[in-house]
Amino acid sequence: MKLHELRDNPGATKRKKRVGRGPGSGLGKMGGRGIKGQKSRSGVAIAGYEGGQMPLYQRLPKRGFNKPNRKAYAVVNLGLIQKFVDAGKLDAKGTIDEDALVASGLVRRKLDGVRVLAKGDITAKVTLAVTGASKSAIDAVEKAGGSLTVTNAQAAE
Image (cartoon, rainbow, N blue to C red; front, top):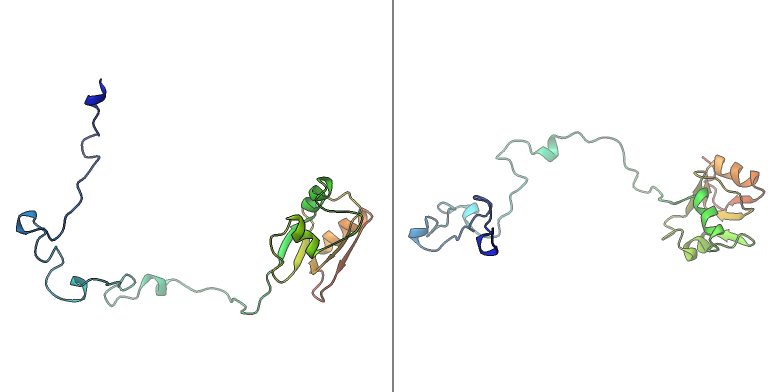
């Protein structure tokens, strides 16, 4: 086989439909849109309409309740805090608060506060001050010899 003999498989490529290019094309005059009506005109979007039938997005069941004033917390795991302390990105000697976590790059943004969870294990003696923490996270930090203070009334859940 030579370079000039290379071809696509038969049926692999299809020519583009050129609409409105005269009667010989088979798609001249009205361009396959029929006569008059909403769909024959440009700028029409009736995608969700199913001809009087109940549309799919309305047929599907709606479940649960979404609280409009719910709080979204940035989540930090203890294992990651330990990793950042080991790497020297967090100072274990001082108090690690939410601003320190953001500055180190462990948390991107605070949202409604930072919540510490107990995934992973911590060995460093750290002093944490955050908005929320799980009971097991508080226990793990205290077991390692540190302290975890929750600044918000919404504490351990």
